[in-house]
Length: 281
Image (tube, rainbow, N blue to C red; front, side):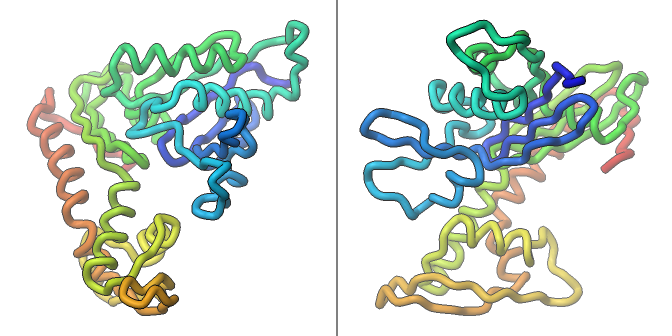
């Protein structure tokens, strides 16, 4: 029997959909392609992501989520409707659906009440029978198996594409937390800027992400690693191939990395009680 409970991690970069009893059933980029002539959605997820930088002027590829919150309500609603209907099945909008699922959506702890209402309303408009919100650090703590039901501090650091949140959970709630709107996207941007300034080479965000995942490191590695990078030379505009090392990536990401470290440190300094569990890190 199909379960009516759906969990959605509505991230800046990716959307994960979990169905009770079935696990994660969808993992798609939170990207939407829209035809400007009639504002019609033509692609969502992987299909839209593949269009980045390759579309005519008549089609816009956009991320409706920015820094973990809704930047474009209408597009986010359409994206949510797509994911919900993909799970539930194609519903005939002219008649009442057989059932509407209960949806739990994770959101950053630092969102405002207006931003929370936007997420809730988007889910309801997209076809949910009921929508509930849970702070991302608390959801991460649950998923990591931290003993958050005990009267001791349990710290979790949740780094997403747009935000990083550090929180201490105790007795099924968040005691203290700190947040900074710096995430994976800022690391990608830092790599793009570093390569452009040092080598006059233009690379895209997809290439920067591949570099980050492939050889990126917060600290210098004992054994240097390198990766071949393809881009466009700023001087002559021609394609160019060069090697980037892991130490260069480490140097490139220092600024956003320090912002993340400062957020974690600020949370630790505010921690109460002083005993802190880090199980599950």
